[in-house]
Image (cartoon, rainbow, N blue to C red; front, side, top):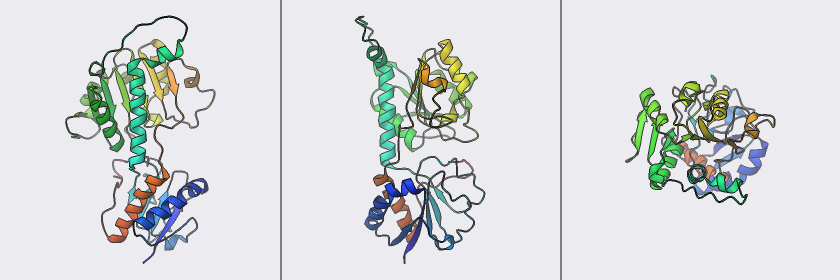
Length: 310
């Protein structure tokens, strides 16, 4: 039997993903029709990305699952017409990219690299940074990305505290949850990494009150979602010197407008949503495996909890 797969992620993505998807489906042993223009009533699986022209899922009467190309699902999870399983992207290429970005920027701030890069002015500054065991790191969000970043930082010797909305156990990692746990994670974060999903409960999680909980001079890294932070509160904390720096990869509006104050702020580093990107070759393998599972009657991977929002 042939599985009919609708690629509903836009023309630009189709040009990038078509060949990897066809290769991955063949390797997975899935016989499939993969196209961008299938009749809705004939579709078995929908490969999806935010911004797709498909917003009403009602006509897809025989579809078994929507397979999201990105890790974030906040733009689709609340769609009232979507009543079939939704799988988010958990891809080892995406995870590896996030681990590298987070580790690189934690080390950058830990070692004070900016001081030496930005001040090649002939002044000898022999300030020696502490060793990793003396620099506390907290990671908010312990999903696939957050847990791997926390493990890597712990392996490098940083004392890492992880926090998630629901209790987690990850090896020997210190894992906290709940409001008391959040206060503790913030209060002990010389470097704070945000890797939470965006939900109504996490929007503006870092408001003025919670930012004030961080140690003086703390650094924030946000490769998660822009609206996790109250922008005005963040700028105020940076202006006052309460926070040392913010390295931001995600924003409420993207691309970040040229006039936005983040661009010119001396204590802000902007990176253009590059911390982790879905890689077509590895993401295609995840999509193909889920379709193989669906055709074989096996449980799908990485299903979204609609109540939790991720």
